[in-house]
Length: 217
Image 1 (cartoon, one colour):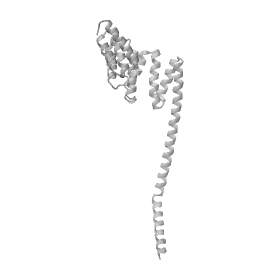
Image 2: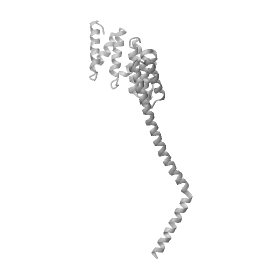
Image 3: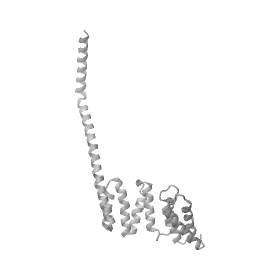
Image 4: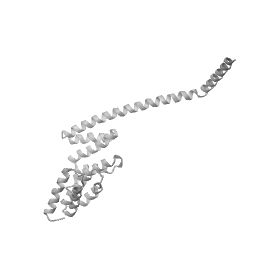
């Protein structure tokens, strides 16, 4: 008797499963297909990304070799291509290197390239500040102190990674402009910061002695 009930239950379950399959079988097959296609697509995209990153890395190395051998125009063009078409990480590095190559032949264009990076919030504050400092190095001999202060003073705050370079550039710019008081302000700040690198501290000390020797500040 128990066996008969079990057989009936099994038959009912089979019938229910058959009905469910008839109703939802196509949907289940489609869902399985989408899962398989999704996994395959993801793996394909991952492979494509890795391949593109490898190609961009090789192109970056070739551009760097051009720069090291003094072929600045060719290097500039190569870095510009990577900046436009390369993978995300290399694009930012290529923009920095492109600006560096421009500095060898066209200082104004290089400053503009660095300024564009410094204004690009998508690259992160470290790259923004680095670009601003590099532009400052190109301008320190020609730009008015007021312009240099506008550009670099925000970078001198405690905690900004390139604050030492920014302070040194401002001290030098003030000195060149004949503003000994401003130059003293920046050399004092450099000397007071225990994290100031030894080379920067040494140069600031020399400038401070020059200010004192001239009886200004």
